[in-house]
Image (tube, rainbow, N blue to C red; front, side):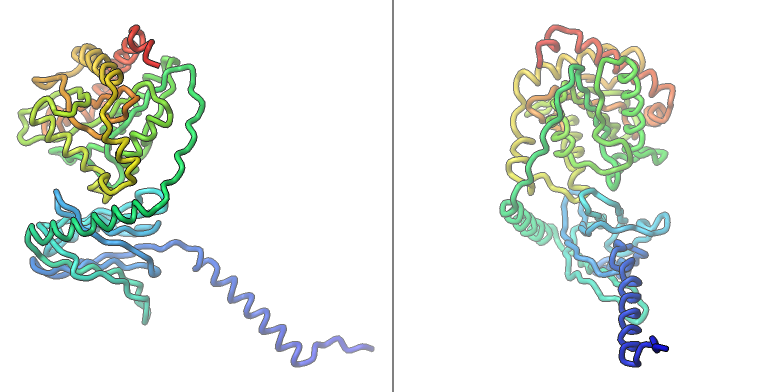
Length: 409
């Protein structure tokens, strides 16, 4: 009888191979798992403050300051935030509060609001050790306005140099144009950028999304239009991506939806904005500048982007598109008057970035002011939302039935 029992050396070799294979299999999930932010801490005082984020593994990061309002932005790869509710309100020292979330393209971000101008004294990541998680540490120190702006300008120049050196990605090919008119609805803000906050803590990003979804339903019900929304959930979309979507899809009309705030509670009512190189009044220009900073709130500064894209955003709108925008704006005012109130100047112009597509007629509809109790109540009312969306859909119908719109494309 032949003895098939492996010899001791062969048995040991086979055992080691099995153990190595098992070790590799056990390590695969850990290698594949994405990083998780499991906790945050803030310590210090009004002169020097430390921000700490606990992580399941070491990650790369980029941190920089932004002005107006003062913020510190931490850019991260795609991470999961496993933090308790209200974590961003546990503040101290130079930190007012902080927000966090995914901003797309495999990137996440923490935005820290500071009580005044600060400098980043140092920032680093500590390797996990002795049962402790990896830690991302950012140390902030109080500074003056001049030193802050110098640091900001320095970071901006670095970003511009990096953008110029990078190869611009190819623009996706636009899908075939439908026979039906294409309307792009753009609910403002979203994700890490809540927009305006009402007296009862209503978030602009929520009410404008709800209205945009209702308007889409009304337009879809007519069977006359293809309707696209720049966002369909609570996600951050940059201003340039909103404009780019409308241009790539060859939109026939772009409608941005907002609901801002102003000082005091006396101002209320809707306003329709079209693009102007020079705003129709100081209030309109202030609002445009505030809205145009929404990308910077999430840490994206349009001035540091690819020059070709930036050029598209700042080109003068073609005269024909501006005329069409005004035609729709007037029809929108006429239809909305029957269902909602207007400000003293229902038609205004301002330099909103989202209105700067040179070949797409575009308007921005301010539904009302969240700083007004009456407007905030209306914006949260399904009945008001429904009848206002019906009126705006009628304006779209009347706009496309005019000869000037029929000749547009």
